[in-house]
Each structure stands twice: as C-alpha cells, then as structure tokens.
Image 1 (cartoon, rainbow, N blue to C red):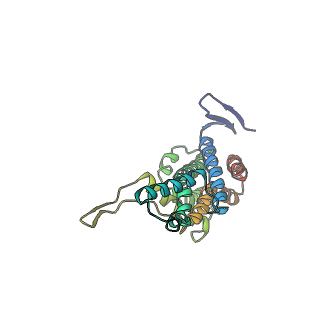
Image 2 (image 1 turned 45 degrees about the vertical axis):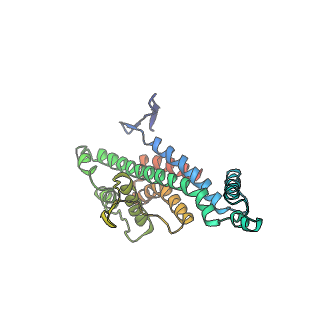
Image 3 (image 1 turned 90 degrees about the vertical axis):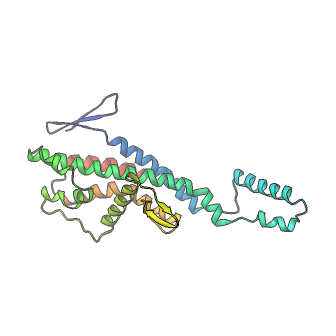
Length: 255
C-alpha cells in the first residue's frame, strides 16, 4: 500500500511497490478545479441573464450617459432621451461577461494542457519503471503531446487504441492548438493595409460566448476523460493511474 508524506513545499512523496516518487502536479489539478468552479458560476449567470435587471454599475453608467447628453444639448426632449434609456442587449451581455470569459479561457486552456501533459508523463514514468529502462523516459518525454496520448501507450499495452475520429481526440487537438497560440504568441501586424505578420490569435472554441463557455468546460474535464481512457485500455488497472483518475474525477465531480 502506498505511503505518502507532504513537505513544506507541498511536494507529495509516495512509496509505491518500493519506488519513491515526488509529484507536485496536484497543485495544477487544484488550480484547474478552482477555475472550473468559476466557469460553472459564469455559465449559470449567462443562462439566467435578464437584460431588464441592471446592476448598480450599469444603471450608473446609463444615468451618467443621459446626464452627459443633457449637458451637451439642454433642449433635448424626454422622448429623444428614451433612445439612451433603451438597453442594447448584445452590448450589455458582452460587457457583463466577455472579459471574465476571456480570462477564464486563458487559465483553463493553459492549466488543462499542463495537467494533461503531467498525467501522461506520470503514466509513462511508471510504465518505464516497470520495464526497468529509465533512460527511455528522456527520449519519450520529448515527443509531441498528441503522439504521447495516441501512440506511446502502445509501447506498454498492445491493445491500446485512440480513435482519431472521436470527440476525445478532437477536443485534445483543439486544446493543443489553443494552448500553442497562447504559449507561442505572435502579434499580428499590418502595413499600408497589407498584413505583413499573420500572428497567432487563439481560435475561438465556439460561435457564441455561451458555446465557448460550454466547450471550455469540456476542456477542463478533458484530463479526467483522457486518464479514464487509459484506464479502460489497461487490463492491469494500473494503481497509480487509478489514484490520479480519482483525484481528477473527484475534483471535476465536486464542481
């Protein structure tokens, strides 16, 4: 049975089958869980959005605009002021949720990508330890993250399959593209109306803000789904992987 201790740096040390490991990626999982909870709250707010219920700040902004218009045109009628009293629903929705969604998007994409890589690296490390060829890890560790999930497990489990036409693969591919756009960011530049640098704006996950938020929630759950896929393919029911899945699934389920 694994023994576990935690030092002052929050580094977890475990003894599994005579092998001592040190792992800190539970911090990434906790951070992802925190952002997922914020995203869940934002999605609920978006679903219950009521343009007739303005916040205090939105009311003040509207009243200040009317006051400004009156100062510029003292003869303006109340009927004409009604134009400024009307609620621009799309603008209100955008103003209330856009910035929060953008910040959550960056955090969830980056954290989910980190947890996904940490998870497959842990699996590979334990499987290499079982095989007794620890030097192999340095070569495998450099492999692209997509190939780590689709091909590398076959080295240890000949029955492993990863359907590239399935939703799980498509979400992993999307997440990697978004992650790369953030971590290898390049500005877009135009000169005399001609684009001279293409840049790397991150692709929008959805057509609308609501759809983007729902897809981001799928991204946050992707690490657990990928680890479950590994478990379903591994007849040995690999104990360290089971513990990792329990941690990921427990965090997701409590959101």
